[in-house]
Length: 298
Image 1 (tube, rainbow, N blue to C red):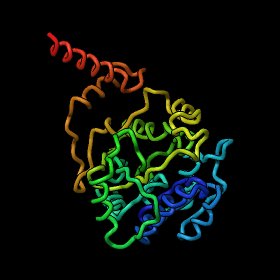
Image 2 (image 1 turned 45 degrees about the vertical axis):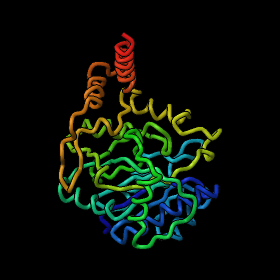
Image 3 (image 1 turned 30 degrees about the vertical axis):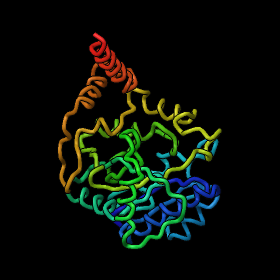
């Protein structure tokens, strides 16, 4: 029995660049070793062939919306039925993973029992298939330091969690905005810890355009994202990694320092639960900016 099972719903293997970065990602997952299983969901072009090539599981008949985009809750239910792994992870298929991903999943299971890990990604332009030699992780770390960018806490491209949690999830459409924000909100209401693993888990997001989506618009501008937000309880439940109060560092749970940013964020949730997080913060920062400008001209 594998310790960790990763599941995902790839995009169609049609666009040349999307094909390259998805193959890179899947190859990196394959390199995690025999203790990690992978299941690909969906029947779009090339998914079954990719699963066969890399030795992954494939479920083509997953529940999906009218556009054929899979639902997260059905993916998770089927993963639980197909895999006995004590740890599960949903990961976007443009994400490169390395050994510390699986290592931290195992360590968190041994240390915490029930848990969820999530963290920030590094954005990097990659346009060709990678050579997965033993030095690839160190090369990419150096590369991200020179031409990459650490993405903001609003982007959550993976969730690692014990199989015993997340038993009830709305039928979110995968690959659209909203479901990841709800995951953080929901986890913070539970007795088990949800931890910021940014400092422990190094992942690389391979940059791409949105030509695979209608009108080439980013996923957060689509009606499916609006539906996800509504299913998650609206804007008030759209949390991000800024809302996490604990970090996962060195195999231990460590409280995150209280910054002004996090303090204002917390006040937003408590004093104005019906508003979208960020609106009040934006107004406060605007007031401070105007005040400083006024001092400058006095």
